[in-house]
Length: 327
Image 1 (cartoon, rainbow, N blue to C red):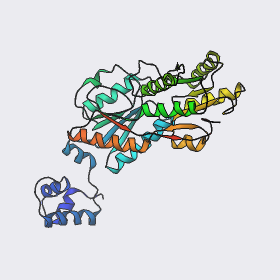
Image 2 (image 1 turned 120 degrees about the vertical axis):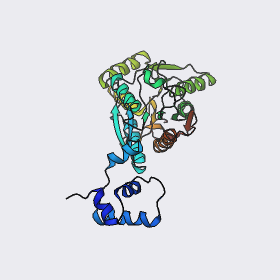
Image 3 (image 1 turned 180 degrees about the horizontal axis):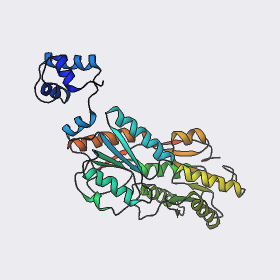
Image 4 (image 1 turned 60 degrees about the vertical axis):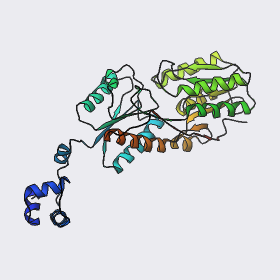
């Protein structure tokens, strides 16, 4: 029969109330009492009721992770690191893929407001959700602007845009096109576009930004990128907003007889471990995903504890020198 707290108390020679206080670390207890209760728990192989302890502490031990889709290598790798970091700190996670589903995202926020999760880490694309307007909620955003009270963890998007654009210009090309999301999307990632346009103009070159929505299906993205090739038949290079889209563009280029890097250069963005192993030839800006996860968890725990946090945390990027970014 599974041992109960009463059995622990009896073996330890203390009251059930005292055993409960030891279990929940409540009030002053002597070292002798603590040792007797813990020894009894070990002898009986007593497993505390986690739900009861959480109720006592008014904590759930659960953190919600809301991202567009873990099928994307960047978000998948980020969620993997976040889950690991949270598990090391005795939290379990609930993962929500919220792409184009504001109802699901709102439901997770309502769980937080109702005390069913202790905090949220979000990197979603949905906008206009009223629940984000509450102040002082334990929420951390990754590469997304939610409201002025929610801290943001991000890579140095501007420097990433500089690295990518200068890499292509230094390769001797002039007609460079940049792909980026809709300007209405509130994200620090738009700084990549600002950097691209600034560097192009500083070098006397005309910037061309091709807008494409992250939410599009693979088939629709491919159709849009076919239009990109039709719209810019003379383009010599592309600075692509993420590595998955860069892989789609490389496939289209091959279909159209464009040789990479001989007559078309490409630089991507994200540099996940998966993409660097599957497509090591892709030159790309590498985001420090593991470090972003660690920082996000640290900040969330500060928010849960009620400690002060900064509004923005910017981490450095590097350039992965594949063969697609130079000849």
